[in-house]
Amino acid sequence: MSIRDTRRKLAEETDDEIRAAEAQIETSTKERNILKLAQSVLAEEPRAETKCGLTLHYALTSGYFQKADCSECGETIQGYQKNWRYCPVCSSTIVTTETEETPNDRLARSAVKEAVAAAISS
Image 1 (cartoon, rainbow, N blue to C red):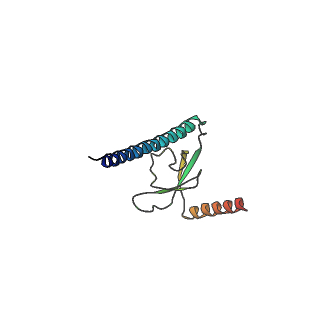
Image 2 (image 1 turned 120 degrees about the vertical axis):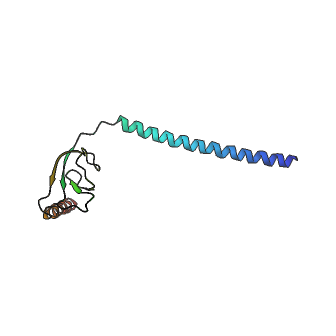
Image 3 (image 1 turned 60 degrees about the horizontal axis):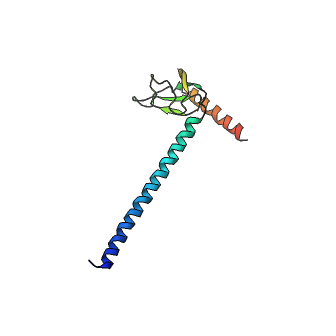
């Protein structure tokens, strides 16, 4: 094997080693950032427990799942089940669950929600 071939082969091996070292550095940096984020989250004070109520929609959307509105975050949750203890969106503790009396209840809630949002923005 000539000197040029040997040098070319060694240069390729060196390039491979450099790429492997750079990949390892990148992985170590990502792990370090993840660990720092975990450390900062664990150092925070625990959030105060919030309580909410769910209002089940008057009519089922389909025969397979039911929708509910959370009083804390205002989101509509699809697929409500009776054994839920926490809102899947905001993690508030579910205290009460009630069913709408008429479909107009939902329209009234959405109108109030829009009015409050408009009052806040102006």
